[in-house]
Amino acid sequence: MSSVLVILETRQGELRPSCLEAVGAARVIADAKGCAVVALAPESANLDAAVIGAAGADQLMVATAEVHSADAAAATAARVAREISANTVLLTATVRGRDITPRIAALLDTGFAPDCTAVDANTMVFTRPICGGKAFSNVRINGDVVVASLRPNFFNAAGREHTAEASEVPSEAAKAQVIEVAAQSGERPDVAEASIVISGGRGMGSPDNWHLLEKVADVIPATGLGASRAIVDSGWRPHSEQVGQTGKTVSPELYIAVGISGAIQHLAGMSSSKVIVAINKDADAPIFKHATYGIVGDALEILPELAAELEK
Ligand SMILES: Cc1cc2nc3c(=O)[nH]c(=O)nc-3n(C[C@H](O)[C@H](O)[C@H](O)COP(=O)(O)OP(=O)(O)OC[C@H]3O[C@@H](n4cnc5c(N)ncnc54)[C@H](O)[C@@H]3O)c2cc1C
Image (cartoon, rainbow, N blue to C red):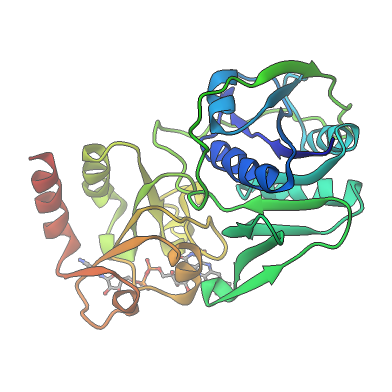
């Protein structure tokens, strides 16, 4: 019997939450095809078979390696895909997913649909935003196996009672050895996965004012901190926080843009957010054309008031 294979991603030994959304999407496809869902963690990690089973997986395979390079992770995934006759391979469209997805497609000699926001399980047509979110492309992969990566925050875990059957699989040898993985500083969730993101732009005035954004983020649990490229280029914040065309794509439930003008390259990374709140002192700033709610005023005055209200 064929299967839908989901490649799990871990960070610092823990499963990344968006993987459970991919497992849920795999469940929907598998139900339409009448086949099983196999989740593969291409490195050893702290994984709960009950959580992964509840999200939709029938089986959980854990590869034996400690630290995995992208080439070894892709080779392991492609080998497992062949072994279980996978008809579909799903990943998350994270930085790591973007690295591994095309490698797996190449090894399986098939095409891939990157950064998808929807899939029709009956027709296997994947929808993906293009041109910075201004248009959508519907993609169907011709071939025996379909490879796709899914944008975080667009799919849902199945939410059922099931514990995945766990087993170990050998890892492929790495051609490139990972020497070090530099841990991201701080406890906040990655902007690409957070369900709420508050981002600052040049309108914040100075890195010394960043604590005003952090204060708001601290009041709302699991809020990610983002920044415009102007901020990252100025060295105020790390590139891992940059939202936009040359940064990360985010699709949170709520995106709060503070002192960000709304340049097209920034919009490319956040315009698919469900609710957008813009705080800007210029009522004509382009960001307001895309905002669900707008506050015109000085961010340095508004943020403390916002934090105080939220604290209540
Ligand atoms: C190839 C390329 C790729 C790019 N990729 C990205 C990308 O990935 N992400 C990205 O963000 N940009 C990207 N850019 C840059 C982009 O074009 C903009 O330059 C950048 O987004 C502007 O950042 P900003 O909105 O913080 O600054 P600005 O455009 O300078 O806007 C600052 C805003 O703050 C407001 N403001 C000022 N003071 C206050 C205050 N006290 N209170 C409230 N509001 C205030 C102003 O009215 C203004 O609207 C890219 C550009 C290129 C050419």
